[in-house]
Length: 187
Ligand code: GAR
Image (cartoon, rainbow, N blue to C red; front, side, top):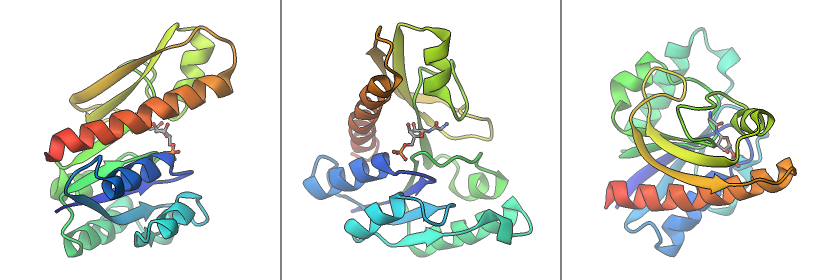
């Protein structure tokens, strides 16, 4: 059994897709053993409860530095014997401490066709730019923002003018691509 940790800051729909993928067997021989969240009250914590996944919730402001909270996180990943870290809407740049200890075993999902539209508002930025083909990227995590080797991508064509409809299409594509990609990486 491969042991996954999922990091999230918000709603956690990708967390749920991964947890459900493990439960249904769409991701074979893997389980989500930890949900790491930097926001008290984030909806992902409700989803974690539903899937009986233990959570590590922390407030970055209560630590003197990023190195300090990442040391605490990495110690917990060690204790849980985590094989792969999946960032799923974790809205922080991963720092030196986590990269030193888990580099090469951290992947991220981004709601755009990288290297276009990096950052925290990719869907809105692409929509305002007026692109006709949107997409999703999964990549290795390094010290850059939304950088690192691309592992997989999928295009989402959309020419409508309803950003909510677009977001929902992109999220659907994310859930499918994340499950397929994790399955392939650990298989
Ligand atoms: C997802 O769309 C993910 O790609 C994005 O945050 C959303 C989280 O949704 N991540 C980034 O923008 C990273 N730069 P979720 O909490 O419902 O999974």
